[in-house]
Image 1: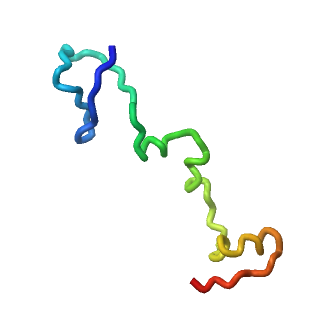
Image 2: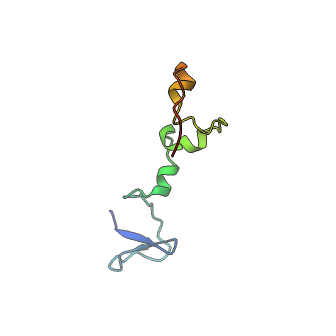
Length: 78
């Protein structure tokens, strides 16, 4: 059987109309994903900040073509 509830103050609170006996063993399944659950995913695309390395090149995003292909640098005047 499935029961509904929500998290309040870090605790799982079931809807008040659910008559479960004290000490009943339950399993919790997350229905909606928040940002915190996305960080726990095994998808490497969601872990890009953990995998990123500081290259020490402050204009890398502006001059990516220069660093990859040798194109002339673009002036970063912003």
